[in-house]
Amino acid sequence: MRILVTGGLGFIGWEVAQQAIAAGHRVVLVDDCSAHVVSLDQARAAGAGVRPVPVQHADKVNDQHTLRVDAVIHCASPVGAAGVIGRDCVTEITEATAAAIRIARAADCPLINVSTSEVYGQDGTNTEADPLVIPPRYSSRLGYAVGKLAGEHQVAHAAARGLRAVSVRPFNVVGPLQAPGKGFVLPRFCEQAWAGEMPTVFGSGRQARALLHVADAARFLLLLLDRPQVLDGRAINVGAEDNTVTVERLALAVQSAVHRAGGPAPRPIALVDGRDVFGDGWEEAAAGTKLPDPTLAHRIGWRPRMDLWGIVSESVEHHRPAAREAA
Image 1 (spheres, helix red, strand yellow):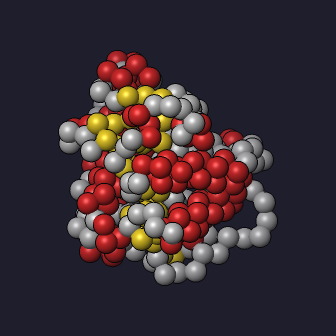
Image 2 (tube, one colour):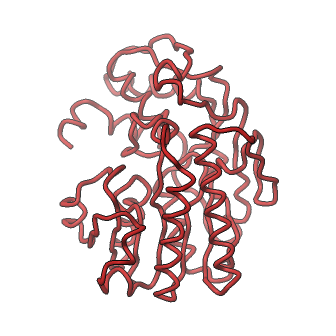
């Protein structure tokens, strides 16, 4: 297949691209380079074609590799609780999603749209049938949720008119290339632990999350291309409920892994306000549990492979100072 990945230089998009290339597919990446985790040269060396433009402009380029594709996997989006601060996420997300739909329609091919678990807006174990309750006030984080939900509606609207498409709601995707500066907790804990610093935990630390390795998330996105029965505009959860952990316990696990790997001894945890770190635009996620019910994903043949300790160990090793310098 010839697969177009929007946001293909980003955290999830690049993992999708690598897996697709490894499976023998031809891959074209569209990315504006605003949240890239690899360079243009690295992507090209790996065998991907790259169009360094926003997805909104990709279908205006007369390029057969952009328009003549067999599938579109739409990952392009603002990312991270800190990365979305100050951005007009609703406009950015809906314009990018509209462009991805135009490309898929022009190519008459399936569209896999990456949404988010943030659309649920409430604590608990979330099923696809649950109501989506987003508070009626403005914040960058809520704008991100509203934009993603609007994107799902765009996709459902297009599917009702014949487009083969599905939206995916990932829960707490993590992995070694995730950027700590965008507010992601695991890489921040890793860097603090290797530096011998106190881990800064926002809120109470008792928030429970289920961590999903990026490789498992990408594998699910690619699997959906072989599941035509679900390409009907619906939304599907993907998450690893067995990897549930509180933020406080995650900080302790990271420190323990760093110490066992020869790093500094654990330090006491510091409970802080995220606004003191990322400014007044920061908004913390739900205070309780935010967990997936991935029953539908399981029914169509997907299960996560990376367990919690494997996730922690891999990220700790990636953020080892010597490893980062070599990279």
